[in-house]
Every structure is written in structure tokens, then in C-alpha cells.
Length: 115
Length: 111
Image 1 (spheres, chains in turn purple, green):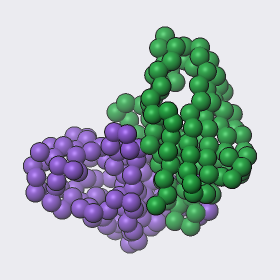
Image 2: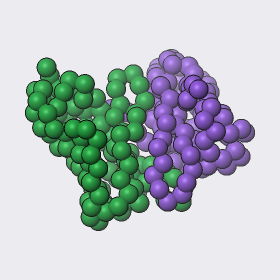
Image 3: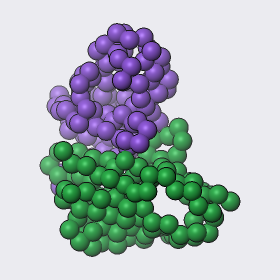
Image 4: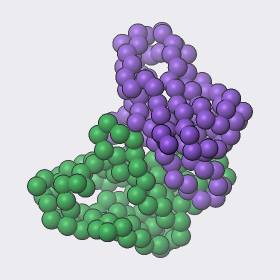
């Protein structure tokens, strides 16, 4: 049982390049989400999904796209990287039981630098 | 926009001291969670509180949810170096399961 896995662990991009951050979970969780973590700002929600084929925007969605074709995978696409997207990105998953905070299981993170 | 402010932002204490971390919002949350994050890793859940006024204890850690469900506190008794890390509160639940994270408190416990 690997939990939540993320690849790559580190990435350096040039401004304007695109890339996809991969996230996969093997716990059959309905809910998956992407966060970015910047110093002094905690974790900010980028996009989330409550099931395959369903995605929605979080607090900071601009510049990012997501899709959810399977329960297991939730990739995050950077369309045209900008230095402001330099951050640590975390993927998380949980069961989806509305009305109560459900334990989020986090991946180890991807450290992205945009030059 | 819902915001969760944590205080203090940084805390450096000696082993054996007690401390309290606060998490405050102007919004009401259906639940409040506390996570701990160690360097290079993702956050890990410590506790979830769902009832106003609820108090939960986890060994030397005591968590309280405010009566109005707008704030929470984390108290650590006799801190140990192993308590070092980033503590994050997160409010949410609701129909969409979205979590709003606080700004974080970085705790360093010196031996």
C-alpha cells in the first residue's frame, strides 16, 4: 500500500515551459486535491476533485489545469510556467463524506523552481 | 474568502516547557483539523474536532475547538525535541470536503 505518490520530487523549469505533476493514490479515495505551499502562507488549494470526471477550482487555480479520468490519478498541468509558480506542490486524497472534515493523506511533495 | 490565522508564526522553546498555538477565523467551520509537517514531507493529521467546545487529548497534546466553531487551540505540555515541526490548522468539511489551511506555526524545541 503506497498511499499517495507524487512525481517528480524536484523540477526546474524555464519561464513559459509547460509540465505535468503526477499524483496517484491506491486507497480508493474519492476526493483528491492539489495544494501549493509557500513560506508564511500555509497550504493553498489549487484544484480538487470529488470523483472521476468531476473537478473544481480552489483558492488559486489560475495557471493550472487538472483532469480526473480515473479514481487513482489526478495530474496537475502547468500551462506556461511563471516564476510566481515556484513553490512546493502537495497532492492529497481522502474519503468523501460530506459535512465532516475527513483525514487528508498527503504525498511527499514536488519542489518546483521556475527560472 | 475564509481565512485562518495562526499565532505565533514561530516559536523556539526549551525542552520541558509548555506552549499554546492559536488558530483564529471570522468564519464558522463544520470541523477543525490539526496537522503536523516535518521537513521534506507532507502534513500528517493529528486530530479532528467537530463540536463547539470539544476538547481532545493526544498524549501531551490538548486540542480545543471554540464554542462558536471559529477558533481552536493546541497546547503542548512538557515539549520534547520530537515535537519540532510545522503545525497547521485546517477548517472545513461541508458539502465539498474542501479544507482551508491556516498560515502555520513553526515550532523548534531545543534539547
